[in-house]
Length: 85
Ligand SMILES: [Zn+2]
Image (cartoon, rainbow, N blue to C red; front, top):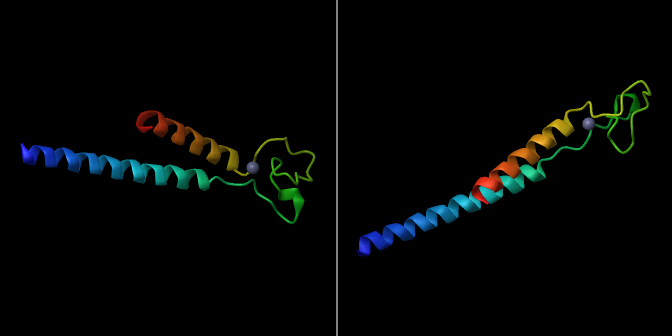
């Protein structure tokens, strides 16, 4: 019985560790979100950047990949929270 009780404790500890690691991974992921590309030559700045793009031909949507990357982060974090929350 004592052994069984110890195993349960170990299992709980392992679970706690896994949750701690997961929380760290998720918070790292959220912290790794990208800003829209900015260039001194504003022609090349992403249209979604607060400074905007000087190229009026450029559609008003992200062309630097930040939106796509951040969207994937949001989706992964949301899915992980749903399963392990
Ligand atoms: Zn962008």
